[in-house]
Length: 436
Image 1 (cartoon, helix red, strand yellow):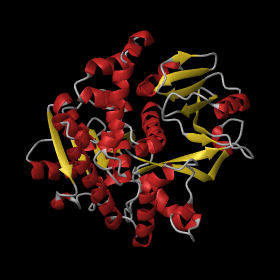
Image 2 (cartoon, helix red, strand yellow):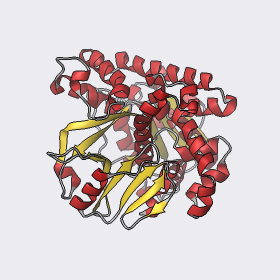
Image 3 (cartoon, helix red, strand yellow):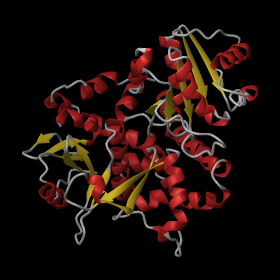
């Protein structure tokens, strides 16, 4: 599959060694980190050496003796039967969290062999306790890997022309001709989501039941991680938080409510569990902003937040949304499409911008705007509508309070550029930066 993030990896490997550090691919399990590293090795290097520290037991302690990189490279060459050639070999450390002092070793690769290309990946780097380890601050770079976007989904499904039309600046009159068709494909994406294995299954079979089977298998594998890695005392609380996300998103007020977990639940009982899930990339946390001044972070209310899952397809699987309900627009789908639409926009925004996302809800008011971010020194409100209803009193209030020059509204309506509010169809979230 074509992955947009791959261009960032190519740029990294082509950089001058003086401006290149070992690269860490971070993200949840099964988002495609290993595939990306292998594809980079296949297409951009003469040789590729992969060390998987989960399965290569004999190399798990390779960094314990010392950080003599020449010794370490010799041991890897002997274990893998391949020479490591600086400038021609991509050395890939997969599941690096299983190597004792593995992360810290990247500092010494940077210091001792800057002309060697080194990539590391791990699904739980933010949460696994590395005894007697310290992080190589300032000595590594990061690239986040997320599920496939809607554009990548279209490309994987053989609709490269449509994907290019959305990406390459085609005029809106041309795009609008395909409005109904793109809207239908977007609904397919709502069901399938962007987990690579799920997308591959859908593209090859077009069988929704097989799609759901793979999604359920992924959910089980995530839940197994709950019992393997985090402290035992928070496992049950993590499971409560994880399983409650779909039902909490389905509510009109999507603010996370602790008492929905159990009647006696308090914030301090679940803070660690929520943070673990966030650090593992399994959920996203969007904090409330309630002011009318910048910077937004200075007016964030960290006690109020919304939680989203890493993937819209997994959200539908956990919610029990079946394909017929989605395609036929059943009552269940109508009630839940607001949550799915917010989840979709969140995922697309995470890919578009590294800016911190908030939602806006002022004190002593029922107004609420789905997302708020700071772009080019200005507040940018983003309203999300699941259908064509464009009433947005809250958006107007937010624009007035922050004196926003531009606001974005995503919906199933066609494109329209007003004086302040830009209406963009949901299938074209990827074009938001062009409109700004």
